[in-house]
Amino acid sequence: MGLAVTGAALFFARIIDITTDPLIGILAQRIRTPWGRFKPIIFVGCIIGAGGISFLLNPPPEVGFFYLVVWASFLYLGWTMVNIPYLAWGAALSNDYGGRTQITSIREACVLLGIVVAGAVPGMSAIVGIGESEAISLIGWIVIGIGAILFALLLKGVHEPTYISYDHKSAGLIQTLKGFKLNKPFRHLLIAWFVNSLANGIPAVLFILFMKHVLQANELERGLITFSYFFAAILGIPLWLRLSKHFGKHRTWCYAMLIAVAAFSFVPILDARDILLFSFVSIISGFTLGADLAIPPSMQADVAEYESFISGQDRTPLMFSLWSATTKVAFAFSALLALVGVERIGSQVMDGEIILNNFVLSVIYSVFPVVLKLFAILIVWHHPITHSFLLDIRKRTSND
Image (cartoon, rainbow, N blue to C red):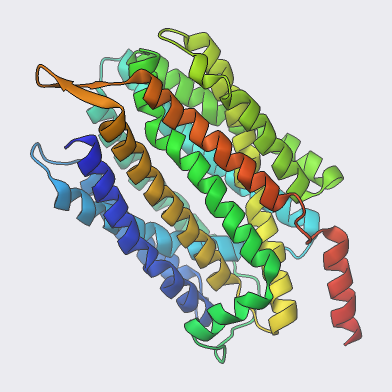
C-alpha cells in the first residue's frame, strides 16, 4: 500500500477510535447491570475485537485504504470496550499507594508476557520456514483462541469490588471535562503521558524498518531482538516496583526515562550489521519499558482518587478513557509523522523501487523520541501526588 497510505489509514482509524473513548468511559461510569458495570462492556468488546483481528490479520490478496480503515476501526473499538473498564477495574482493586503499583506491575507483566509470545511467533516461524505474513495470521488466531479462554475466566471468576460507587447523577460529559480544570496534577500527567506515548510510538512504528534497512537484520534476527526487548521489560518490572517504594512513583518513572534516553542516544551511530550493539540498546530500552507500563497507570489511579476528593464523584472510568484517548492520539500522530516523514523526507524512487535514506530513518527513529522523553521528564519531575499527599487528603476526608 505504501508507507504514506498506510500511515494515513491508521491515522484516520485512530481518529475514529478516539471519539469512542469518552463515550465508553461515561458508559462504564453510569451503567448498572446484574453482572456489574464493567463485565458487559468487556464481553461485547471481546466479540467486536475478535472480528477486527480476524479480518485485519488475514487480509485477502488485494486490499486498499478502506479495508485497513474499517477493520482497524473494528479492532480499536473492541479494544476500547475491553481496556477502559479493565483499567478502571484494576484501579478499584486497591486504595493503597504501593498496592496500586503492585497491581499494575503484575497486570502489565502479563500484558508483556502476551507480547513476548506474539513477538516469538515470527522468529519461531522463520525457523520452520513460515513467512512473516503467515506468522502474523497465526498471531491473530492465537490471540482469539487464548483470549476466548482467559476472558471467559475473567468474566466468570473475578468479582467486581463492591465498594465501587455507581454514579448515576454525575454531570454530563462537557461539564465533567470542564471540572477537570481544578485538577492540575491530572492535566500535567495527561500531557506527560501524551508526550511519552508519542516518544514510544515513533520508534514502535519504525522498529521493523530500522532493523531491516539500517541494520540489515534478517527475519530471525528481527524476531530475536523483538523478543529480547519485551522480555527485558518483564524482567525490569520488579525492579521499578521496588524503586518506586523508595523514590516515589514519579521520580522512578523519570529515572527510567533518563536511562532510555541514554540508551537511544547511541542509535544514530549504528550502521549495517551492528546487530549486537542494537541488541544492547533494545534490552536497555526494553528494561525501561517496564516502568513506562507499570508506573503511570498507578499514578493515574492516585490522580483519580484526588479527583474524587475535590469533586465528590467517582470519575475513574472517564479519566482512564481520557488517558486511553490520549494514547491513541499519540500513536495516531506517531504513525502519521514517522511513516509519512520517512517516505517524504527520507526516501527516493530509483528504477521503480523505493530507496530509504538510512540516516533520516535513524534520526526520526531515535532523536525525536529522545527530545520528547526529556520534555516528559521535565513535566513529571515535580508531580505533587505522593504517598504522604494521599494520606493527607484521606485524613482530611475522614475529619470531614
